Image 1 (cartoon, rainbow, N blue to C red):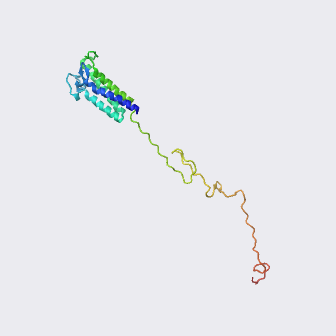
Image 2: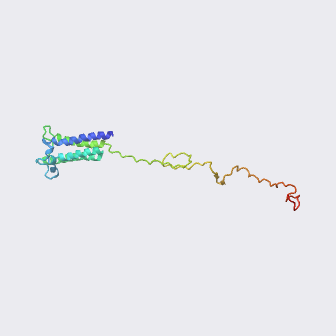
Image 3: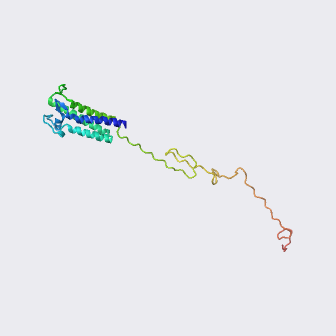
Length: 221
């Protein structure tokens, strides 16, 4: 956040310097707003013809300032850097064309050579590029991790998974129902032999009852 604010301030100062530079002397006391923009792209080079306000060097600088403002709002380092490149590119192109037309390019203290307008354009473009380098740009949001859904079973007394990629532990065994081993169902008291069947005992018979050894056939009870 601090880098974006500092970079934005530098870019705004540079854009302001670039836009105000055509209203100062560029070469031999002639202001930048008097140079025709079309002369920079023709073979004839720079002429003495006077340009209209938005047909002069002011136009690319205004476009660069607008791109700087949009880049600051959108936190786009690429757009701000593009604005700085535009300012420096048109300034260098103008210097090449003036050098071809004049045969030389000098810096004189009496104002007959390069003026403060050129210095303002160069410094402004450099500040815009510096602001783009200082800005951190738009921060991309981190992908949200999916929340872990509880997949435990009823009666599960085991520990819950600590991460959404951990496998769900199996349910802990309970004491309800028969217990099983590898050899089959577990019997209670497996180390003791089963109880033997009780000995058979005939019910007591009274003397004289049918079926008793001492009774006679045909006796009635």
